[in-house]
Image (cartoon, rainbow, N blue to C red; front, side, top):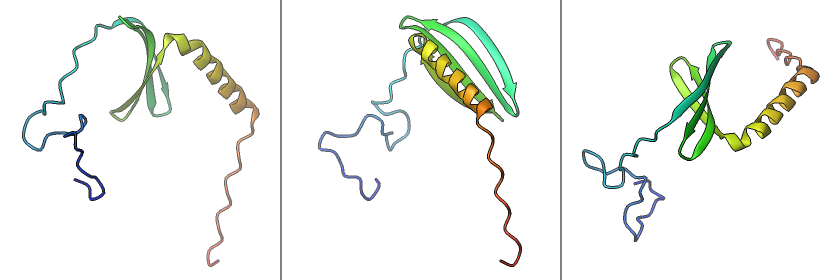
Length: 113
């Protein structure tokens, strides 16, 4: 236990792992969710690989964006109800990137100063 962490009168918190071997009674595996892949696209930018996958499950449609850099993956999920807003914001960022000039690199300090 971390020194500033106090035991709860209600027992262990669900996200804590058991101290023994094997899963605790709180770490039940999630049941698999049936997901249908509707469309997939991939783009490589510099050393990053992005996979865009439009999927559907019983809760609705969503876009999963996965970034793969050297085997490490990060994913964000955008519900289909927010895709138009997401696109609008990305378009605004592209426009701003084209319009705002890049900053000049900071000059390196002279040796001996």
